[in-house]
Length: 151
Image (tube, rainbow, N blue to C red; front, side):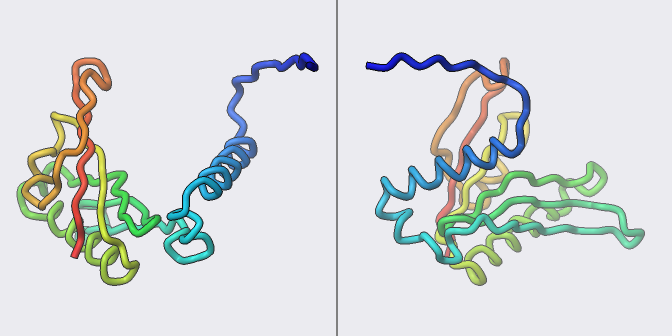
C-alpha cells in the first residue's frame, strides 16, 4: 500500500470550483438512471429564469431570480420593494416564473427556501408545501424548504 501525502488548501479558486461541479455532476449522472436520461437534453441545463417588475422611472419594484433544471423550477430569490408590498407583485412574479417553467420549459415542480420571518405563509397560499424545516439556521431562525407541483 502506497501512502500519499496531501495538503489542504482553503483559498477561493473559481476554476477548481467549476471543475469540482463538473466532476460531481459526472459522478451523479453515472450513478443515477434519471440523470443519465436527462443528459444532453434541455432539462439537463441550468437555465436562468428571471422575472422583473420595473417602475415607470425604471427602478426595480420587484424581482425573481432562479433557474430551471431537471424539470424543476428553483426559485433562489424573490423580493418586492417595501412600498409595493401587499399589492400582489410577489404573486405576479411567482405566477409568471411558474408559467414559464411549466409551459415553456416542461417543468413539473418548483422548489425554494425561505426563513420563518420571510414568507412561508405566502408560498403556502400559492400551493407550496413544506417538505423540510431546519431549526436554528441561522441561529434563532428556521429555514423552510417548500415544493409545489406545477400544471
